[in-house]
Length: 110
Image (cartoon, rainbow, N blue to C red; front, side):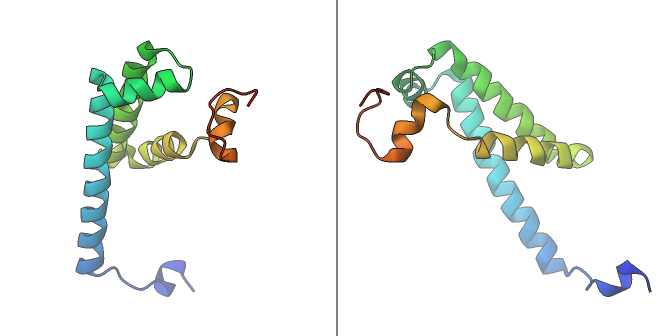
């Protein structure tokens, strides 16, 4: 018995829905990465609030843009999906643990 016989065929509606959702997510990530790349003020303020140098904003934006482009290109979709998942799902650095605990102060001593 072949494994391919056990799967239901993909309908045109399912494929269309998947393409639309992937397109929306990709568009959002491209806009987000572009805003970080050009140094949009709220992103830079967020970096400095958490103790990072504002010069990191373009590099973070570039990594997101590169990951998203790899996700959009059909030949490299799997690699792009892994990189985007790592970008979005990365744990916060230790100095940001205050945000998880619910403290109102960004200082680690508080």
